[in-house]
Figure 1 (tube, protein in one colour):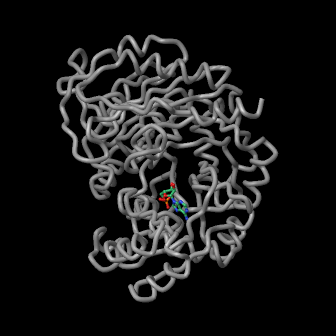
Figure 2 (cartoon, protein in one colour):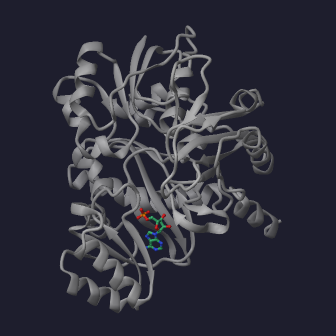
Figure 3 (cartoon, protein in one colour):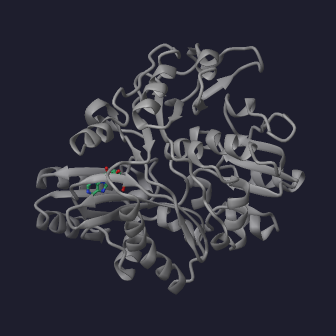
Length: 440
Ligand code: AMP
């Protein structure tokens, strides 16, 4: 019998709430602040509704007050910001049980300079790089790479703090913008410059308990706004899992190469990482290399992972908090899953909110399909229409025995849903299918 509090309001949190609600252990669930879809989820145990509470994910004091009053047995943190702000340490000091890395461990995501130094010190394969707070030294290093580099703000910058450069002029402009002009404020007072890596990019996730790390299957995000990986970078326009670029054996080897030295390094540095470690990886000719670390579930990777996860997520998160993960088995369905993000017109730039969304009921009736909400709201509860309320609006997810069928099912659901200005990519998972064709 457990009461859960989930923190966050995106598609990732809807997927977390949906999966956690299936656990027979859960008797009550809140989500702060949640979204239009989260408030419609029901617990498997007694069909009671998940309750959205109007407290922002970064309002640590408000969240603590709520938790002290309502005593959840476990708080589950979705987004990176509250982790970087130290919500886990704060809750633990008050004797509240919470899942996610503490502030020291969350530095893998909150400071790219920290992550880069750690990787180099402990032999985690990564790009050649330098860390700078002086523009002249940064320019000199970028010049030595022929300008082909990624210039990254050290701190959290809403996923926008990375500029990809292919010439010395572009690199100098990026250094000027981030370091000198402070385009990302304090987050860019230090920058990391990495050599530009070529290859296929994949996402890895592993659940950790301070000692052990349990690897998830592979998935791939689609970061650019437009088909064919064109247009500006976004929070992610779609995902699928598993990816065909790695066999199970290669995945295990990649996991060992990265998580082996990473776990050892955490031990040496007394970093007690309990949560999801999610390295972004480039599969290069010289092997896998880590581009960056995230210290939480990916969005929209979570949507495809959790539709494939067969194990009870509450039990897994409990084991992650308790340090008993090595006894647990992560069971995954053999099916493929595809998530297509439907976004507001103009995203990732400016966009309007408050557009009426139609077709959700019809799409929701399709088999093996789940429409996860991200930026949606419902003004007056049951029966009133859903309105758009953010850049990424929905994560339309479907699963099937083949990737081709999962993709068809996801787009069939997308085609039932309408709102003014809706945009989505039409090529989610297309690269995987092309790869499969050439390797047949
Ligand atoms: P990050 O937030 O560090 O993952 O960077 C955002 C995106 O920039 C990544 O998903 C990659 O597509 C790209 N990127 C980052 N670092 C590199 C690199 N060293 N070489 C090539 N592409 C990169």
